[in-house]
Length: 179
Image 1: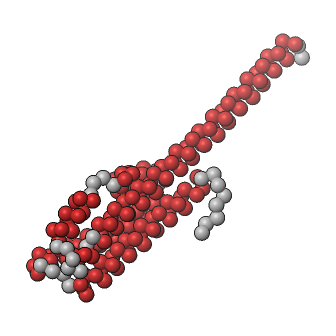
Image 2: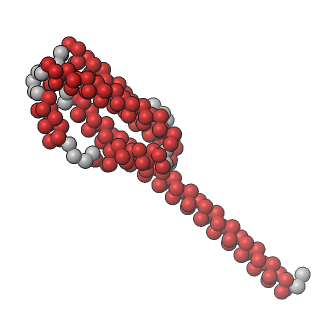
Image 3: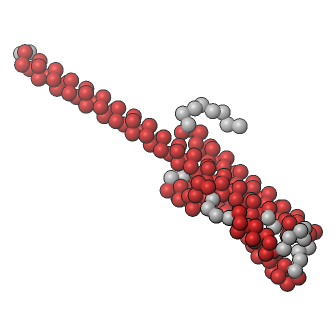
């Protein structure tokens, strides 16, 4: 081989090797950035879910003093309005957006939690109709129904949070046992 051919071939191989290393480095960094982005979105989803669940549970529990006859329906509504306002971390809107865009696999547990909230809201409609008609609520009837619905909603919220955690574990970079 001629020295000129050796120089050209060596330069070509060096260029190809450098290009391959640059490409692999780019791919690894891009994959790492994507994993970090998804992990952050899952953390955001977890915080939004937790804040939403706490706010909804607080409102659900607010009906118990009405059933016990300690406060009126209007007083309970005033308390809810006073404690109202924005839910930290965006609440339900943030949850729906993150699940729809990034984590459609979490749609079933999310729908399960929202379905339980719908069940509670249906119960509230029945309670309101009775309260409007009679001015009171039967403690024996409504206390157990409210408590049952709160527990169902809470279980569904816990199931959603567990699903979020299970989705986040592979992205955490840690080798964590389930449990």
